[in-house]
Image 1 (cartoon, rainbow, N blue to C red):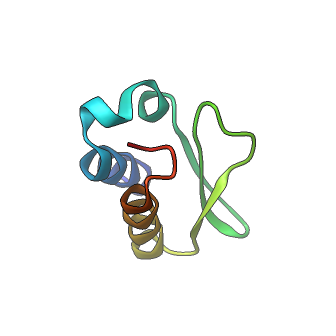
Image 2: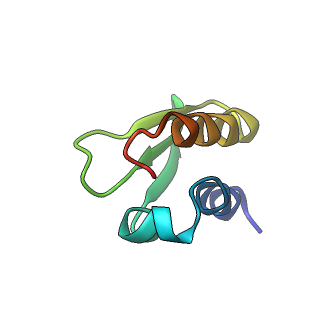
Image 3: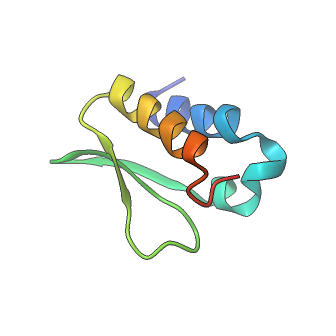
Length: 71
């Protein structure tokens, strides 16, 4: 499993299949010069997840716990 797939799996694990729906299926997760980012359907801008895979996983879990439209 590559880093991208790990982050998608973290997203599904944090939110659950029912809570995730189309947003997760069509999530765009990518890494640029600033670090990992995630773009979900229905949001206008990507979310900064952090510079490392560990930071990105922690950010996904934090966003899910706060309910930022992910659950």
